[in-house]
Amino acid sequence: MLNFPTETEEELKATINFALSSNITIAHFFIVVPQKETPMYTLAMKEGSETLEKFTEEAESDAPYYSPNSWYQRTYGIQLNRYLALAILRFYFSPRRIWRIWTKVPKKSIFDSAIKLLAIVLHLKK
Image 1 (cartoon, helix red, strand yellow):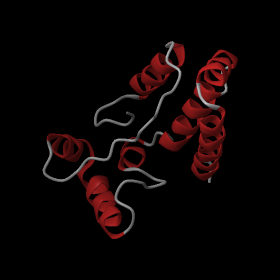
Image 2 (cartoon, one colour):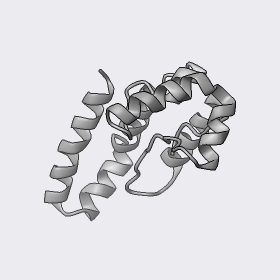
Image 3 (cartoon, helix red, strand yellow):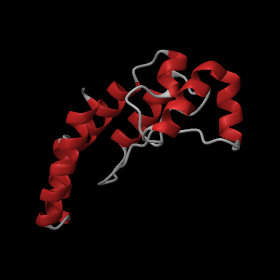
Image 4 (cartoon, helix red, strand yellow):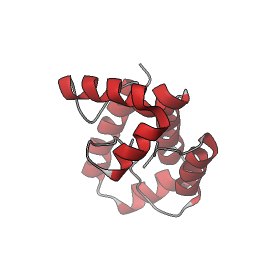
């Protein structure tokens, strides 16, 4: 999970690098979305109340769990979508991981996942 309130760019990179250096076969990278009436929302309010309030208004009227310009990016100015796209690409296009997936995962599942992955990466780069 990426973009916790108070998370620095170095911590963001460390999280991604941890996944990249691990021996896991499959990983999912998620962007944290602070929800009202939670401790994380309270912490995010302390970090950037104006941007969080604007983001929350937009999220409630559009898609609540995805925004191309997250509150984190608005508050800290870090290009989170770029980090997310690079993490996915670097994780799944590692020759070691490609081989592991190819040998352990059913081929139909690989094909279906590759199509979904491509759609996600192309969408994030917009």
